[in-house]
Length: 232
Picture 1 (spheres, rainbow, N blue to C red):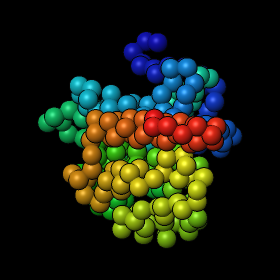
Picture 2: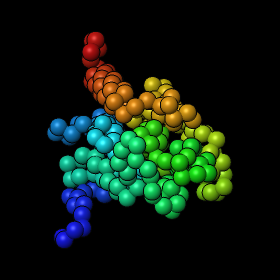
Picture 3: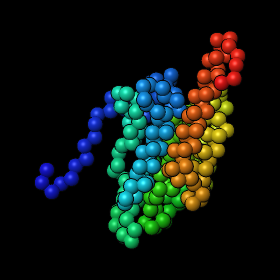
Picture 4: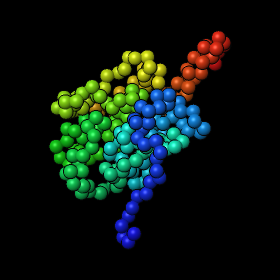
């Protein structure tokens, strides 16, 4: 209307991703087999891949479960671009100090939390990848990262020091796909050094492979339960 620009998004019947998996415990975030719907984690990573490969590159800046909405068909959609930013080579960032102080600490990269200047607090594709690692923890465990910590000072210390949420040991969470390979990917996504984190292309490839392996393992378990034994 007039000179104003508006963003219009379709209604997402199932709300946020974390609430969706909490209400639907049967949902498998790595192997969602509804029609042509792929794994939700893969879809989220593909969303970042699209943003990061766009020209100019777009950084989301506040990725977390609450900002990932689930459609009526079970598809995952990245939402809430209030902190997103287009990175244009040679441009000068003129965003406010409030913008730089914003964000959700449980998903935020340590370099952003430790930042003392606007330049240091610049959100990047690497900080988005860090948040993707945290989102992976969130959806596989059905809990926000560091859910056991309510003290904000303790939380800030852990985030600043680059500590990882505890790796789950319960069989239910492991059976959802939180195995050693997934733990390794999460650790790499949440590396203290931004340059050591994988890019979105690599994350997509590794999550697709994890989904394929997870689906194969589930099929083998079903075959064994039926009393059939042969190579898959």
